[in-house]
Length: 597
Image 1 (tube, rainbow, N blue to C red):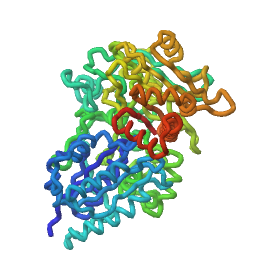
Image 2 (image 1 turned 180 degrees about the vertical axis):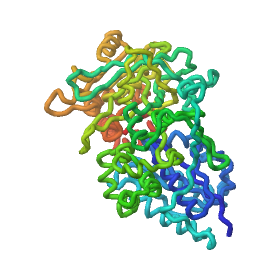
Image 3 (image 1 turned 90 degrees about the horizontal axis):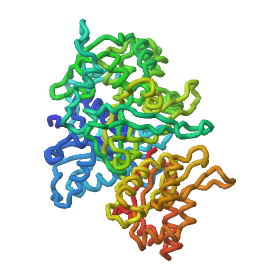
Image 4 (image 1 turned 30 degrees about the vertical axis):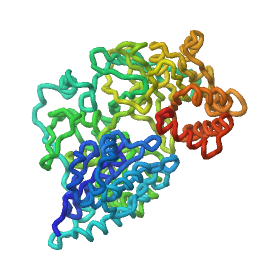
């Protein structure tokens, strides 16, 4: 039987699902299968009825939500008018990526599996449930599942006998070729990036707005362990508009010192220019890279050399290594047997791609430039809740940002790429521009003037609620109830004076939890329980909305537990009825959350 076109479709938020999908594509090509790999929302979903073999790779985000790049697909596939025989010609398999510390572990993959069966699809395998919490990460579940998958697929479509499989140690062709130019182009990359913006289209990932930074101010006490910044951008003339609950995406860049070090280790001239050409017809070049482009621009603005490498990085690096000892170690790291050692070397201490390349200098110095885009993932934009309203701050956009820095067993502290880059920018020293665009967030607020809103935002989770309070106060909506938590009143109480003034004017009711100011730690969920009668009154009798934002680890579950306890105590509901009441609030969007890891 001739090989069909294998289609791999992914929904990815942080890049893991995309990385796994590209691994599937490589493994398919080694087995001589034609394979296309696409983001779900870039695929025309109406063509699914003609696909014989599809692998879906789906992450679950937040509280059981699909990633941004599969939301349109998600809406379409759950249409009630789709016939139950729509996908009767399709064999499929679903690989899920999630985190078992969340209540809705791999919810998207499980729900999609059930839906495809309802539409007549035939499942080759049970759903793969990759788990970030496993000490070896998702690969602990993915590796055995892929072995079973290829057994099933090759049972249907065997490798041609005259060709055989391409061995694992042989590198597949690179996706692109870099043609180095003898002369410098007339316009530098930065100039092209700026002048290439379409003034008529709204800013987007392909065409971000270069926003001047107006201010960059630390808002935590110098004594506080964490550096938190309030950063303001001027968006005059950008065409950007946003409402409370929306999110700004910022495209960061690598530091000049890391860019220089990378070029030295790989023996690249940062000032050399090149043009990029795809090897395969139908494949386009990354929209974010200008043509022609300098090596410096490629490394500083595109290659994510500060990220922790995935296993696929070691697989390709081993293929490209001419050094016997280094190649042996790289092969071990990329093998199933070497995963515990790889975790100890790389994931646990958060060792970066640049640091790994420095540890394998003979291999790094021999990497062909054509393979740079196969080897190193692109820098992904970072999302921040917008912390201001255009009604209060016209032509301005503000964010509240914690600077990520922590220590592992490595000598150098680990630093968040975007937060460290933004914190280093000082508009007082000269003009600073930051590429950004906006998208809808997970929070919306009622437009009816008499509907109250309960907002729970500990730490930097309070950011979207500042935008909401500013917006609602400007529109004359005064039923604003804010639960804010931090460690110390005098160290990390963000916008204290602003909240006090709004309280004085009768526009806000504020409840605080300063966790370290007494022997027993007090958090926002404790304040909710203390104020149970008010919370029940607002939700049950006054139709209030309940919004939650902040760290996704324990806080959302603790707040949900506090609410169900209030429903039982104040509303007289049984345990199951209290859980149903909360589920109904979620279903009707009166309970909303925006959380992050």
